[in-house]
Image (cartoon, rainbow over all chains, first blue to last red; front, side, top):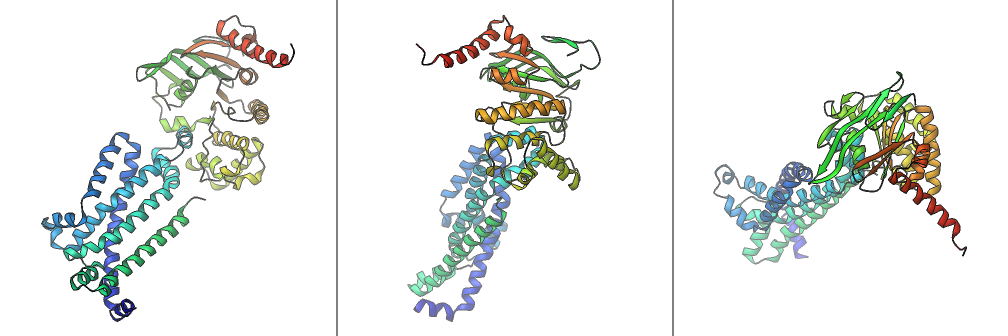
Length: 210
Length: 269
C-alpha cells in the first residue's frame, strides 16, 4: 500500500513521466508503422527481398537495447537530444513485428481471390487497397499491438540515456534500493501497455471487415 | 456455324462469323518445361469453345493466355483482332469476364459489392450499378435478398452463381471459365449447366470453357478442343466428337461409355 501512497503523493511527476513515455512510444510506433507496413507489403510482393529484409530486422532485434542506446549516443544530430535517439531505437525494435505481420497478412490472402481480382482487371494498387490490405488488416494490427507492448517495456530503458519516461522511476528506485519508487515506474508502464493493447484491439474491431 | 473452321485456319464464308480470339503458334514453357507447344486456335464470336483435356494438358494455361495472366514464350494471341500484349492490360482484362473453380469472391465484400466492383471502378453511377446488380442476380437465378449477404453465408452453388454474375458485371463480350462447376455436387452442377445454356442463348457471349469432364464438354460446347500434353489434338463439334476416329477423342468416349456400362453391370454376374 506504500506504493499507492507514494504514487499519489508524486502524481504530478508520475503523470509527467507517463506522458513522456507515451510520447516516446507513440512516435516510435508511428514511424515503425510508416516504415514497416510498406516494407512488409514490398517483401510480400517481391519474394527475393523477403529473406534479406527479415534477416536484417531479426538481427536488429537481437541487439541488446542498452547497447543500442549506447551505440547511437555519439551520432551527431541524434545524440544531441536523448528523445530523438530513444525514438529511433524504439522504432527500430518495433519494425520486426510490424514487417513480419504485414508480410504474413498479405501472403495469407487466398490466392483464388487474388487471381480473380487480377483477372477482373484490378490494377495493382486497387488490388492492394481494396483487397489485400483490408483482408490483412487484422494481422497487421496484431503486429502493431505486439510492437506497442514491446515498446512500452523497452522505453523504460530510455531513461538510462536521459530520454525520460517511466524508466526514470525504475532507475532511481534501483539506485535507492526502494521498491516503492521502482513500482511507481513499473506499474504505470504495465497499465500503459494494457491500455495500448486494448486501444489497438478496439481499432482492430472497428477496421476489420465483417 | 456459317464458316469452315479447321485447325489453325478459319475461313469466313460470310460476315457473321468473325474471330474474337486467335492463337497463332503459341508456345509456353516455364523453367524449361514445355507446357504448351505450337498452339493455333480460333474462337468465333458467340460460340462456346470447350477446352477438354487431362490435368497438365495445358488447357488452363491456354485460358490464362487470353487475359494475360500468363504470357506466351513465343507466338501471339489476338483478341478482337489486336495482339493482346499490345493493348492496355487493364482494359483487356476488364473486357473479359473470368470465372474460376475456386470462385475467389472477395470475402470482405457483400454479394452486391462483389458483382458491382468492376462497374464501380469503371465509374458507373451508384444507381446504374444497383440496377445492374439486381439484373445480374436475377440472371443467375438468385433472389434479391442475397445482395446483402457475405460470400461465407452462401452455399457452393450460390457462390459460383455470384462468381458468374461478377464476371458479367461490366457486360464483357468474352467470358473465360476455368472448370467453374468442377467443385460442385452433381445436382447443383446439373442446375448450373442448364442455366449456363439458357444464359448463353440469351447473351451470346464468346466463351472459352475449360473442363476435364466429357459430359460437360458435350453438353455445353459449340466446339470441343481436345488437348493432350500441351498440344491441341483436334477441334470437333460435340456430334463429331462422339463419332471421331481420333485415338484421343475415342479414348475419352470409350472411357465415358465404359464407365456407364460398368456401373450398370455391377452386381450382375
